Length: 382
Ligand SMILES: [Fe+2]
Image 1 (cartoon, rainbow, N blue to C red):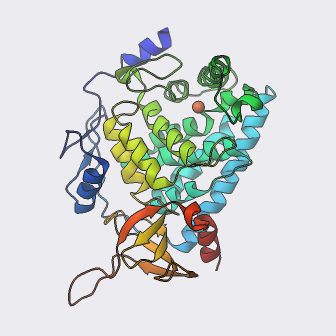
Image 2 (image 1 turned 180 degrees about the vertical axis):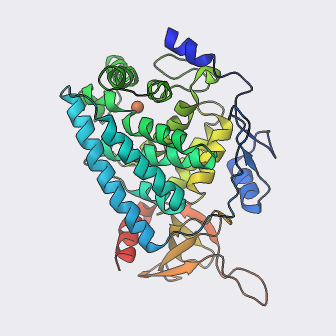
Image 3 (image 1 turned 120 degrees about the vertical axis):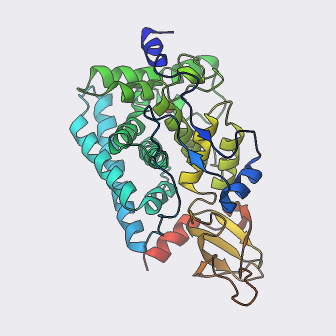
């Protein structure tokens, strides 16, 4: 263990963890989602040193408008281009332009505060051809969103967003044939991959100015796991820097939901279940719950089956009633594809008080030969 890690660990003891106030025992994801839906679960961040967590009530959330979604899509594109430039420059040994990264992160945080649901919406954008750059933006966006749910200060949100954007800068020195290898990596290849967090850390430390320790330590430790089975230092949860714990969740979620050269990408609802199953082992238990709260039970672009036997695509998650988002219905009751039509799943029959339609399950769009992102693009594009 390095001096760096020891120093950081001194600031994180056992009592420095967030908890779920209504429930500290292990629950299944279905039980948890039910609690979240019924409003029984209250998330409280007790990691703040002054213990003055702001309430993370969902009642102030508003639905994103099409205009807001379009705005964040433009921001995503800009962020991807800037990130690509910074990372490619780094590969050539150029100094990291921290001013540009800070400006970009400030813009991201502004959007997150102004329209949090539209903001998270942008992470459905994946880019097979420039995976590392798009992934870096998505990790930053998801991490900022978690920080917001935690009630973090704007400065903390900016720092975590910075760390998210730059966390994989060290991958620029990993040969592409290893990064994109379709099969299993050899031990030697995996050892090379495992060097990237330290390379990221060292590059940001040595080739930039004024990057706070919070950011550097988050970058270095983004592959550490709660049970100590991660890398590069193999440290257990209480030694893992707080920002790194958040970034690691965002990193794994975006990585497993992205289509890459060597795998197909997992649908968001299954990815959430996987992340949930790893809480406590790989991830901080309470932070996973904040993550799910930030991203929604049914993330944007999830394909679902309704109880009316129609297919629908999630357009706008509903923080107040997570099981009742706004959707685009894309088929008739015989599952034949139709022109997408907007439907708000909170609407119900006034006489019976029973909702007209409900979600039965999430589906893999590949099984139905549909492309949810394309459907949303066409809908919001008019
Ligand atoms: Fe990484």
